[in-house]
Amino acid sequence: MTLVLLLMPSLFCQIVDSIKVEQAGDFIKIRYKILNSNQNQFFRVTISCSINGGLKSELRTLLGDFGENVPGGKPEYTAIWDVLKDVDEVNSVDFSVKAELTRGDASELSSKIKIKKEPRKNFNIMPLLQLPGPGYGIRIGYMGKVGISMQFTMTSGQKILLPGAVYDGGDPKLKRYSTDFTVRLINKKSFQMHLLIGESMGQGIGWDGPKVKLIPGVEGGLAFCPGNAIITITGCRLLFDMVNQPTDPIYTKQTFFTLGAGLRF
Image 1 (tube, one colour):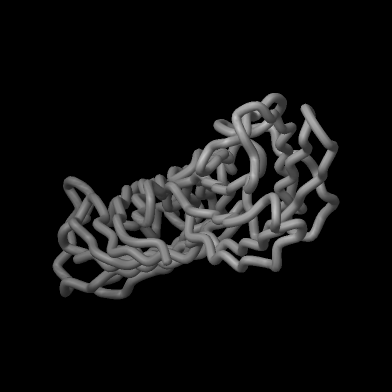
Image 2 (spheres, helix red, strand yellow):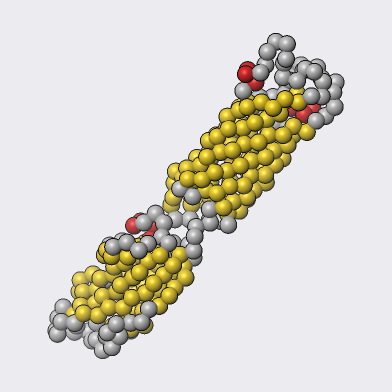
């Protein structure tokens, strides 16, 4: 997760100053100072935000210097927000850090910061290995909460003949095309998993020489996304029975598996 930080002018900066926000993996680290405080003073510190332009709400999934009885006199204070425990995705956040002196004269201090998160890397591209064959190809797609993924593979026809098939034609390069719809199943910090399901169209060798036939099929699989990488495992079943009449047999195999590995961007 990459954050772009925009600091807004501070209010009551004679008491709260040096507000800083840093990225620490999938956490946001908020640092601030309470000026002119001492160890005999205690503060109630609240951190709230408006996520994606919504209503402002108080953050509770925090660690560090926040809440009741935060002592004064420290050179710097730090609170850490575990972002993905509170929200699935963040496009923009308007933070408000507020400190109230609870022992002594009542004062309310605040400072605002705006952060924007770059879009999650949902586009992907990867080379593929298809078995049996082997065959080779490429897959490209967009995988957010939902998405779409398209695949193309090519295999030597002679290498995927069914056992016992008699075929004396050439060696056509058989192509297969797939379109899968995707849905995200797991979203844990820097790891996601997606389900793929869709349709495939593959070529097969018929009895009548080198002529190839386009055959429909179904496909399904999973995509695993650790960090910026992506790995896909899919299986396809071409529905030969729809065209495999006794007078028009198809000699090539029916079930294929593909393995892909690439990058998200």
